[in-house]
Length: 98
Image (tube, rainbow, N blue to C red; front, side, top):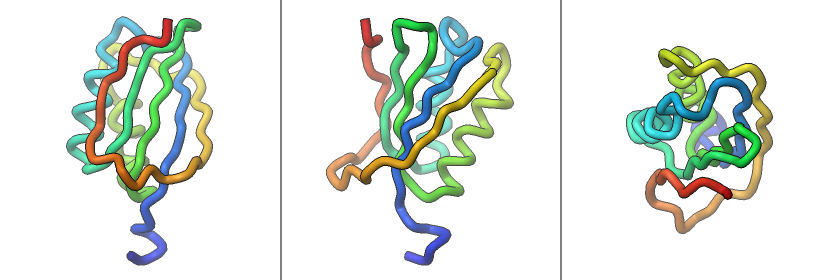
């Protein structure tokens, strides 16, 4: 894989109007479309945490899709790289954290 296609993993925490607006289901559709793996879940504080694994471009595509989605309003986004999970094979919607 070239540097631009290197498989990475990011943990993203979205703040804003991100719960009760179909965020997790849109995230799953965007992840499937972009060909990334990972998961998404609601947090008790109203934020949403997502881990995405793929190339930087694929991850960016998922985030851009969510930024353009109706009803979702991302006011802040925390992102950091974390270790790749070599066993992960799909993207899943997880149960809420509470």
